[in-house]
Length: 238
Image (tube, rainbow, N blue to C red):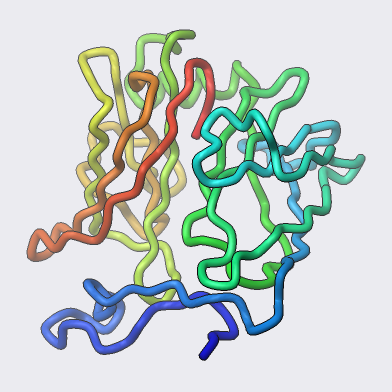
């Protein structure tokens, strides 16, 4: 059998609120039978000003190709910040991998495709920073400065209905005394906050480069949500 899209399995713990009753039973489904490609438009926007960003090179990188030495596809955004990609789909699990965005005055950015792509998604919007913007956000988050030998991570948590979720704690295993982090509270980084608000977002700055794991846990009941691998590069945002 096949599924028309990726999704969450039902039938989770009845002791959880409805928005979290999928925990422990999440599945992503498979592409529709016979569907081998997914056309998608990527739109690059300025992270702070929400304006279109042209001339951004976007590489589609397969699972396992962490350095993206053999990209599946390479495109460049037009004057409207848009570029079209055709993503190949495995019949069982769709496409797993990441995007890499680079531009003349932009901080290079990695976007992990999580959950895997299993069908058509009309458009992705991806935010990019220039160095001055990223430095400002990092300082608001408590960093003394951006360290060129370190990487930076932004993450979003969604509940079983696909909505950004409050009341979640993130942890990253590539932190040390040089790393700072802040949750987004009313769309402003707050390094005194201890959990997500309705935006469901967090940022880590000056993390050690390399492979890492990012873990999300519900504050209520200390319920484990999930753990995902993240790729951290020197001078890059993930």
